[in-house]
Length: 234
Image (cartoon, rainbow, N blue to C red; front, top):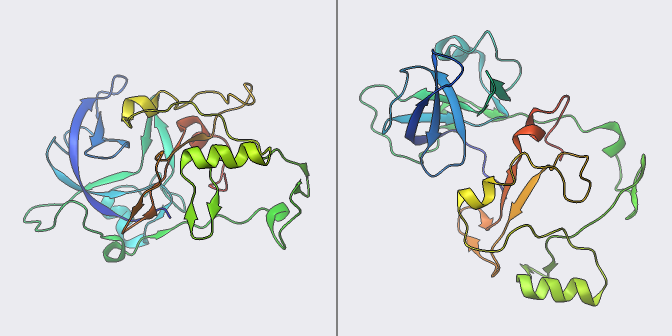
């Protein structure tokens, strides 16, 4: 289960935009996102409200946040002067008494944009082989047995026993942002002429977390998010 929320974050670093004198590139502590902001609006160590992509922001905040001129229905991932930006950062202001991680979704009245379901995906579930527009290929990256998911070694054995295709494994090792981000914006290893949608990260030994449930992460590539007429139905 993924968590959608507007939350308080701490600014990790600020770097000048190489192609725009009036813009800064911000990295967020303990997050893989970077956000482009007006120069001098935030500094390293500051707290800010982070609004993720797909946030539907109430009308009354558009002028206050200074986003009316480029906001349309929801927040998008964008490229500004050649640099990828994901989300919106708003300074918390003076005398703020909150803490990093505090949830302000309800306070701002923000909801997550719900994409219309394409006509070909509406109605009853189609057969195992594909959808109305033809067959699709299937590859498996996890198997649940009852109420729990198989550990990686058991998952491999299960797929081999029943001759089930598995997704390609690109990396096995300790999790670091550097290890994962090397696959951002790569081409598919299955169909080299296609954009790789992203990568899924999961522990070799299954884990759960009291807030999010099963521990599994997904990095969606910048190019995939920026593709024309894209939706989150990936």
